[in-house]
Length: 141
Length: 256
Image 1 (cartoon, each protein chain N blue to C red):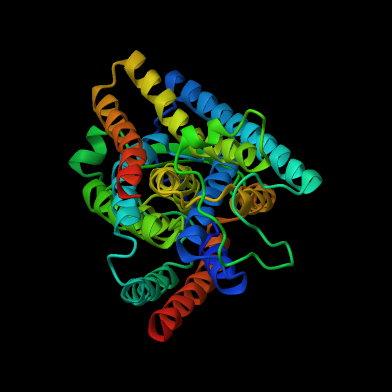
Image 2: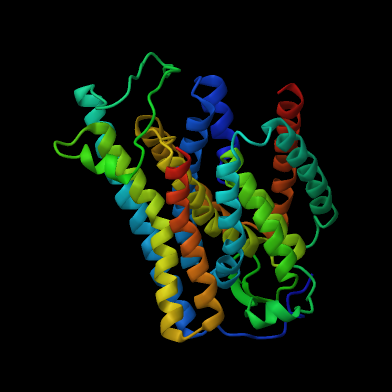
């Protein structure tokens, strides 16, 4: 059970450390900002009692005929002025979904700088898949 | 734990609160992004996460997630529950066999693991020393990740269990690195299928908002606990969870 047979020492290079710090910050701030926005929407909902979209029963049980959510980012943004609680929460959730995507984009930036070809390719492909997911969903609606 | 908690959220919303299945799945996926990203940020800062392994395997998980999200309604969910339940039981058994192993035996890295530089090192707080490790089986792990992605998009779960098993069992990474890296990937995996659900109108903010916030609070506590525990303890805690989830899935699959 000794760890010493893992003799191959392979120190963390500096770029890798920077990447870790950037990613950690993006994740932390992404989640914090989206949580604050979502919470703001929730408080608006609790104080105004208006959802702005779809019926909702608050008798400890959600209505089975809960209306469909916004069908895309544009619909969320359209309901932000004047701000409706549902749209504000929607914005918060959209920011949450964007957080890992921004994280992938940031790592692509670091790999580009380091000219790490294998990882530039890998990370770009992941970004393409993520971008395509939004379009595929809209097509299937 | 490398688990997103979706396995609990979906049955709770759909069975206990009567939320339509697709909307429960959407809410669960978005909440998973919150848990995963919250915990991932501290694992990454603690240098437990292997970013290269994560990025590479995300190729598989995101493709799988989109596939899974599009397959909702096409494939009978019952069949999948039974399949995954059986798979989990088998995995629990293989984890049980290696329950005393604190760190994996040194492995000979395969060509691709070497080329993609999938090795790494971390400081183990419980052991009080630096641990260096190498990886193997890059392609089999990637294929498993595609399956894990499908499960995620289709069942609204993070499928962290499958991710951990692929890295611990196939790539032979230390358990802590596997759980931290799994957590790291769950966010991107869930974002890929959440994109499909959102664009389809299956993410209702009124429902998802409160769920996501509640789940976030719990995640913070778990992340701080894990770095202080031993790999063997984490593995032993993992086994009963696997068995429980497997039983739950089998029952759901059989009862429908």
